[in-house]
Length: 455
Image 1: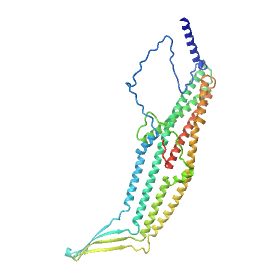
Image 2: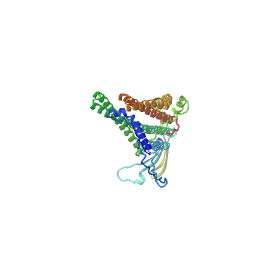
Image 3: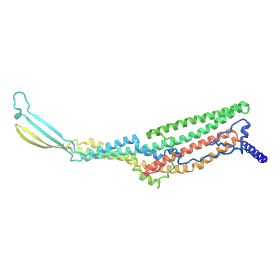
Image 4: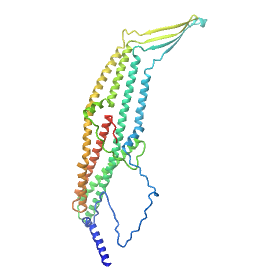
């Protein structure tokens, strides 16, 4: 029995010695190892302690608190499309323009002429001596005036719909950008907080070494400056993340959940050749659609001015009482297009239509070229973002872990750890930026191509 107890005590002491062996270089100077990203604690037990059996609770009788899932980008986009005031305002403009287009084809309003003649001073019999006329005058738009008005109104409606499409794209891309920026800011904040904690430990260790005469004050000043730089970077990153989160909550018209945000996977790029995709998508772009709508309105305005050059026709029908006799009145009134013939109005309208036709052609050509380059760039970003973890994050993380472990064991200088920390943080920042840029570009590429993408 004594032999067993002696062996147990010897094993316990040996295990304790082995556990503290890795921290000997740091403990020799009275320092504390730099904390890593995760810590583990354990409570040793002795042979004399008897574990107390813990009753297994009935899983059915204990209520499980439900944790809300993280907010997804799909949920954000669904809510933004439904709740955005900018979209509601654009839809209201479209409704108004469409109502105006429907009303543009109505018949012109008539006029009612009431006339009384032969009034004079002195005694007279109004019933027999006054002439009374009541005439209904109706403009007759027989030269294409109504069709010209309808074309102008249809152009206004098409331009309003193009504005709605542009607003919808801007609102959706803004929501995606704010979502990704908030997510990146929160992840960078956590990484910088961990870096700042490690630098505080290093500075505290150097302060003790300077006080004991083992390190120079200039060395302490260098690391103090580095700690201040990281804390400033942390402050700016935290403020930027809070700003983006506030804007995201504002466009959602609801607070963000405490469960955080879920990073969406990178979608695949739109299928097909970039040149073909660009040609197909160019006509659907809001800028091109707006240019086409302005051209349609200008052509309608030119047709309206040409119709006005022929003059207006008015039909008159009414009642006239003369010298006590009741009579009917009928007539037509013409404008004779002999001299002016609306030459100035026609010239301006034709010139505007030609200019807007050239603008539409230019907008289409520019959109095609720009979209082809954009589709190629989105594919390139997707390919680069797919390998950024392997090419950038993994090497930087391995170097950082090795430097941290070697520093805690006293095998490398603190300066090497700080350099590894800086490389790791910058690599993580660059990876987040390229991933978010790639996702935003791919999402916009699917919007441009008119295809759905699951965020």
